[in-house]
Amino acid sequence: MNESVTQLKDTTGNPAPLGLLGFGLTTVLLNLHNAGFYELNSMILAMGICYGGAAQIVAGIMEWRKGNTFATTAFLSYGLFWLSLVTLIVLTKLGWGAASNDTAMAAYLAMWGLFTAVMFIGTLRLNVALQVVFGSLTILFFLLAIGDFIGAGADFRHFTGYEGIFCGFSAIYAGLAQVLNEIYGKIVLPLGPVKK
Image (cartoon, rainbow, N blue to C red; front, side, top):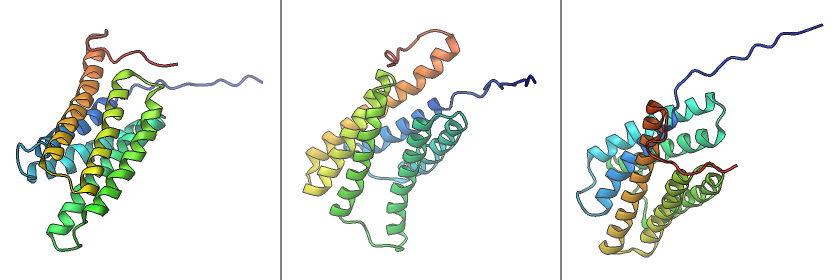
């Protein structure tokens, strides 16, 4: 007996640019603060909730639907990272919890650095653009953790901020490259070779 098999073509859009841009823009804006350009303010918190947080969560759910475990894990994790970071700040401001001391923040950031380092290993099977994003993010998390752990001064924090700005712009590049390459149907902005 012959059984017919119907395969449905995935016609949904690529959610990765949304996730990369949500991460990248929010990271740049936070790290402009870390580099000393302005104080921590509501603009950063709003970006952390809406674009860094919610948009990445949406992108992660969309990647889950496409069967992309790496992107699902990355976008949902970093979306929830942004929401947790904002929550750490807001809970303290509302008086609903004690402020995290430098040791606690160093542990928080180091765990995210460890997670990101393992995710970086996954990018070695992907493209160079994502390797730069995850590699520079790993460095950023560990620099932030070290800064909190040793009670680093302004110069170290400003240096870390500039590294974070680089990381954020690398994610913006990776997201916009995917958008432009798809629109034009050719390589407008290269992502680097895909590893097999």
